[in-house]
Length: 267
Image 1: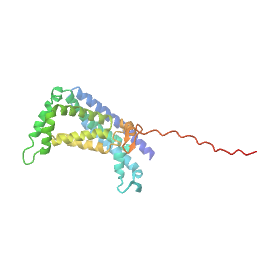
Image 2 (image 1 turned 45 degrees about the horizontal axis):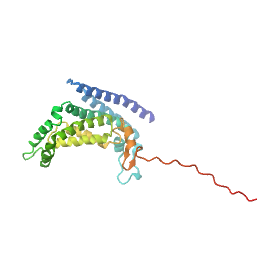
Image 3 (image 1 turned 135 degrees about the vertical axis):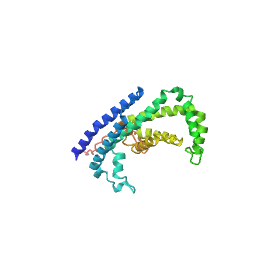
Image 4 (image 1 turned 180 degrees about the vertical axis):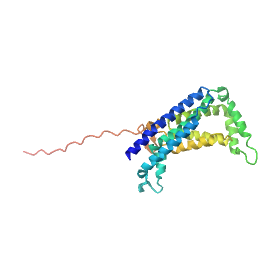
């Protein structure tokens, strides 16, 4: 059993290296303004399929140790959910998915950073985006709901410069957080929030797919950033009901017990 686990571990190492290196190349390729296809999308799809196969192999090996116990309560977590959402054995799978989600968010934000005349504090792009969304509010089956149109017209439009700044640097921050595995679940959650807002504004594009991938990262927040900075951050920060090492007061040193006193015999 241990030899099989060792084999899946060593097989996953080149997979992670290739996915990470290809993603770095893809980001540099796009920042440099190259338009030729670098086959990054199809490469990550193949790597994801291989990582999924390796994950299921390791799940089959660890399944017996992941079975729910009576102490887990009335609704115990299934073994497959324990493995994929809470076990480091699935971290390679989530790493490949992170490279896809993180790179797309970062590049989307970078395109806005280098276009300050459109995405700067003037809010030109946001005003055009809102105008396009408001045009989809009419008809029997409007693409944009009335309550969201009110939000765009009365909240977003008067503060277009502020929302332009938030969206631009929010996309960059989400991309970097997911790529480097820094509070990955929270970063992916903000990404899903932006995907939802784009969908509510009538923009489909890649938002449904990217939002679905982001939700998987949110659900697997405990381990999706294990191959990243979350490996150190999560144990250090901890949870509200389980403080980490940064917020846990050190225990006072225990004093050695004193030897019992013996009575001195009287003369």
